[in-house]
Image (cartoon, rainbow, N blue to C red; front, side, top):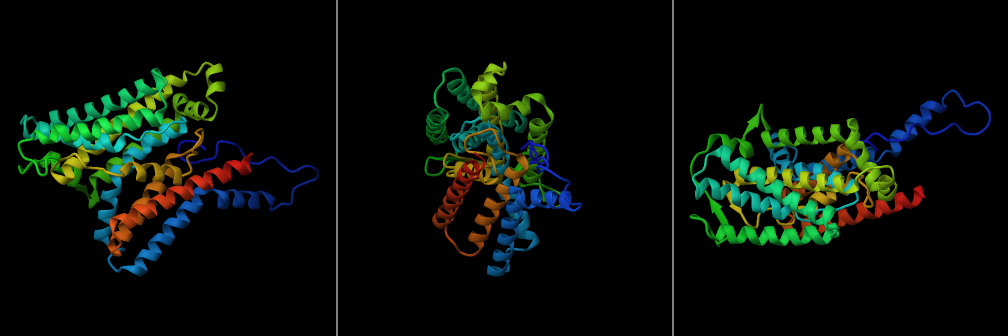
Length: 350
């Protein structure tokens, strides 16, 4: 698949012997359409909307759709870059810690240092990028396993955020830095809207489109599929696998920093426990969207649909009165099903 979900391979070859019936091309196109994982995701999404609309009258309302769009934005922004990481054959478990650390750093600049909104935003983006580059150094340069390296980074950032927040001027339970001043521009980032559409959702769409175009329209982007599909063959053709790994992890840190800024804006403060468990939702959305666990295959459109499904599932369950532990169990079950489906699909292909 390319960056936006189109199959990389061309149409199936003609069957041996004789002429094809006149309707065969139409049947082949229909078969290709119905067998696309994207169609299955759309069906699941529609079924979720139908089920939750029947369970709770408040689900299919304009107000709840706005809430849903705003709530999935931070997950979706990071999921776009995570797609690159997984296509390249790696995994980043540090993203939730990066979001928390960034939110605390931005709040500290605003509250303790009395910095301007622009400077505080740049600090947040810079922290996210530095964390991503640190992950890239550990994995691409030092050769540490991505899961181990990013899990270590997660603990450093998560508990580092606790230490930084504990020194804040305004904090609760030693884990938060809050502000009460009106900050029009900064508040707009996480709470504003354009023609009724939440700005974070618009920002998510822009970032996903840019990553999708990068994957499908640039040589550097297309080579990610070769890196993840067969790293040895990619190296033998002159592709620097380490460079691609470093880039993907650095980009993921950068967009996690952006999500941390949105998080800080939405909650008017930085929270060291912010984003707890979000890495599960992000990774689940990517796998659910068709990105292969072993790398070399995936699409941004599939990831976007995966984000919509996870967000809809959590939103609908919350409106139905289902508590957070049960929501997490459901998300874990979806992740397991997505991984099992990927295994079955690869087995069938082989």
